[in-house]
Length: 527
Image 1 (cartoon, helix red, strand yellow):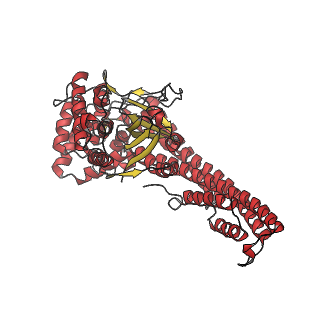
Image 2: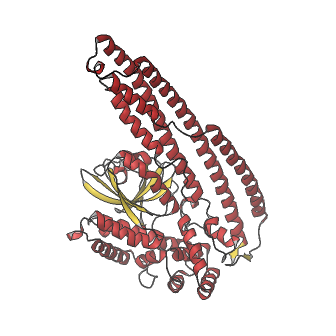
Image 3: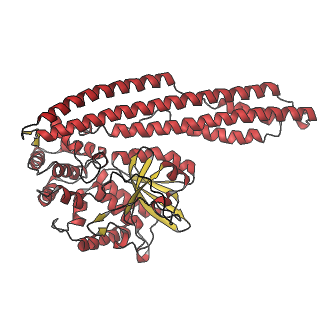
């Protein structure tokens, strides 16, 4: 569920209206025109909301965080005492793993409460400031209106003597300052609301265990599944099951017949590790039937954490991946991480030479949400291969297949927007259950308006393809993660990096590719 604090786009619409009126007021050439624009500005709604209510809710969240901290301390005391290697839950997880998961879950919950409290407090402060600015601006407009007096009649409006012109210009200056103040208030409100919705949606997605809504698994099993990460990176950035995976897996478990339900529970109970168990549930979430999952399970059974990560998770996010290390000569971020299977990059054409960026982005995005699909590429038909050269051939073949499915151009170059939308919908949406639709972005306002939906989607674990253009032509990439005001981007040149929200809005996406590919002009959103 999307968190909403205001009616859709109200702050943005107010900002746009006041921006237009600011220009009209500053250039008004007659008294009547000026009065009309002042009345229009005064009719724009003031920033709504109650700062005191938001501050009170923020305090409630902080209080809840303190209570959860106490739970963590109790869990930590249990962990320190040492636990026997006993099995618990319906799927036979180790008690020590349960305690570890409980501790991390408590930490995440406390962080979520604190994060929510901070988001609400920042919103309260920004809203209070915006309401004060708006009040001052309206006072200026009313003063200008009083100075102007009543509207001129038809004849009076035809002629303006020197004194009348001087009075009009004086009032116009006061009104311009007033509407500019209101515009700044609307801008502050828009940005504050967007940031609060972004952060609250993110923290809501972190309430993970409860999203696995099924009676077929115990609370212990749900807790450990939601907590399991790939290893090899920061745990909180590399959970195997996304929020969307957990919801879909829970729904699919509930719809299984008795025989399939028993088979799933047996596979989960016999899993060699928490990671193996989580990948089985991820396969269920991706829409695979139990028979296919049993075949998949037999291929990954008993494999090490590192083997599973390498074969089933294309992108692992390093703890230092968000560090700002400046830009290279080509305008891209210095801090880029390679996406590879052994020595072979997940890259278009196998070496970056082909123009199959759309198909290549889509292949990697699907592999991120569907471990069965990923294993078919990395491990081959048997699922046991570990050969980068063989992986490269399968990767390029799949890129070519999707390129043709999207009616891509000859010589593996270029694909139309309709073809891109179609393969995003069938390939990524086929695993997430979503209908992907294109949204064209013609301006910074368009990109700003779509950003909350983009961030909510990737926070839930749904990749968002997008297109950029510039002096070097056009290119397709995928947004795959979101943290605070940063977006994680996969580039089918075989790398990931982080860019800021402002980079996305204001045309600096060359940081993820090169300086000749800056403006995001279309995005493909799951619905």
